[in-house]
Image 1 (cartoon, one colour):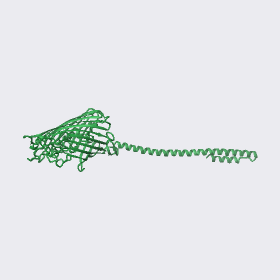
Image 2 (image 1 turned 90 degrees about the vertical axis):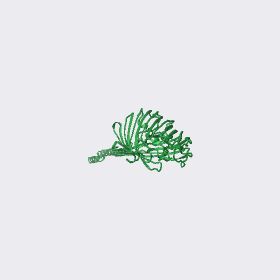
Image 3 (image 1 turned 60 degrees about the vertical axis):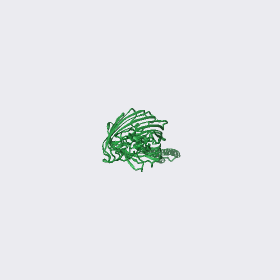
Image 4 (image 1 turned 135 degrees about the horizontal axis):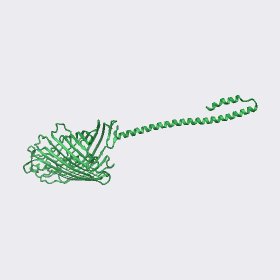
Length: 510
């Protein structure tokens, strides 16, 4: 240190001091100057030492702070990276489009889950009377006015990819309204090829009616039309090959039996005066959840082609045209043919060969929409059946049509109207003398209502309500899932009264 270095110099000066007074005085003055100089140096050294110490501490504190900040930044970046990975299908989490999901680090193996629930209240009013001529079965156990709550739909869907993103799978469970038992609705694997091709194998919704293809959570009214319920091919087991471009989509299906409600006529069974009961003995259920030998279908084919003028395909997954969406039109044409095996013990009053065709058009205006379609079905019976006035027949020529429109009166509220009409061509087979004039084959319903998204459109909560009035007795087209129970006519063909239904529904998805 400088202070210590000055000591030898001071000692040397003292040693050289002369003994006389002048020399002593000068020596003492020199010593004093040296002391003052040494004190000044010591003071400067102290200041320098303090600055050095403070500088070292400042550097240490700065490094410490830098390390702490670096650690915080690293944690934040890691968290941000994790969140980004979750949004892109990284390790797991929630995404608005995917729902809850898990994924491998490379994104090849993914598992997503989504769900939907529709909680409904319905009131149905009809006239039953003392006669149930058109229905052909007693009705004393049914009330004319009925109301209550039900969970119309509750579903869980698991979907994702395996091996790589081109292999897509889906498993959907629906819970029955009666008892809540889990029912397998969809279970398939789909390979997606380059060029817009994909091949699907398993159980899934068939590509026939446009109204059936659209999700139940995206309907315009509270429930699908009775025309759809009557003519839909439902879910089936088989193969589907599809090709999609920006403008055109083509689908082909080959598989087991297709569903067909109201596909068998009313007639005298085994010579007795009892007619087949609509809703139980009529129709074929399809191949959903069946073993390979449960339904003996000789063949079942479906083909569908669609073309759009704008927008994207996702826009047509529901029946709404939200404000701000692109204006576009979608045109569809489809047909199917199948031959089913005879059902024992039914005197041949069941389908043999049947074919059906449908055409539809959907126009979105960005805040309003129009949807119209028609469907025709021709059914050949296993054996000819007696008809009114004598003679017999061995076919059914059935048809239906639906026209509906929706309009957003605000960003979150949509009003709609729907009219549906149809004919099952079964009255000619009501051959009992006491019911020669009974009517049950016609359909004519007008429905009006509204949808409200309290948290904003395209969000998870939707509240719907509608009112439907039937201008004809609903018999062949009756469907409890749509809250339309069978009404009746007297033996002279007069309608016992107009039937009407009020429905409200709370829907939420996750």
